[in-house]
Length: 277
Image (cartoon, rainbow, N blue to C red; front, side, top):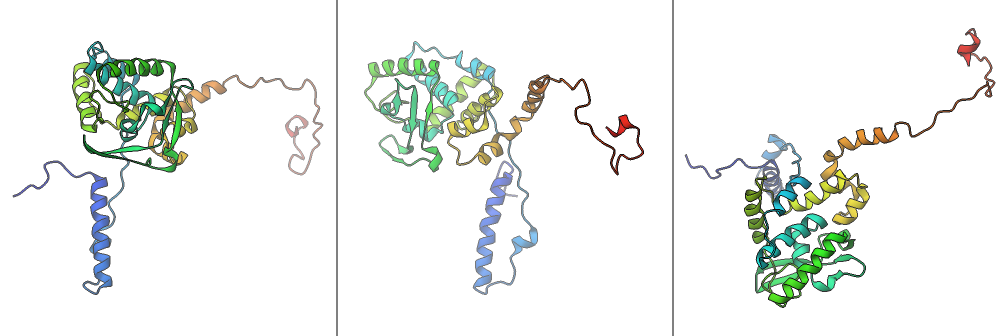
């Protein structure tokens, strides 16, 4: 028996195939080639929401310990992972970043394009994924310091407008994936996908108790529902933290005498005065 797929198909892929087949069969019905849509008989494949994967702060700290930044290439690798982890940028947004998108005085990075890379000599810029993706986000002081250090190191080796480049050309996603694979193994932590660095940034902010609206703005989500739909499962413990903060917050000081002067009514009639009150 011929096995076309070595691994089971994901639910999302199966749903996509079913949707495409359903459209084909619906068109066939319109053209009179068939009377019913078999995908409707089978029923829809149940949607299963995948849990996002990410590195915790401790795992990321273990990974960056494996870089020797006195070596130029390892310096590039270190800074690339750091920048993605600490900004939550999409890989296409980060690889498109130019030095004039960085405002060192204001401490911000402007995100207004994404990179479509076919080869080192064949690439183009396009608008960000959504309108909300066009944004400016503040950078923390340490990231600004590391960014400045990387700019100086890069200038000694190559001339380029790309922030994330060690050889003058844009950085490919598969290169970042190889960096993650190599250094995750060296650190003894689980390997994640490139996009999971974005999830790692969001989970870090959530662990700090950051407002979801701030996370939405930093990640460039179109609406808060996207943010909560993606990362809402990381918030349960925050509910207990909220309860702790509420404890003792409101001072209790009751009246020393009856200032309400509540009288008996139809509901409380016949009850003892202290109960009626």
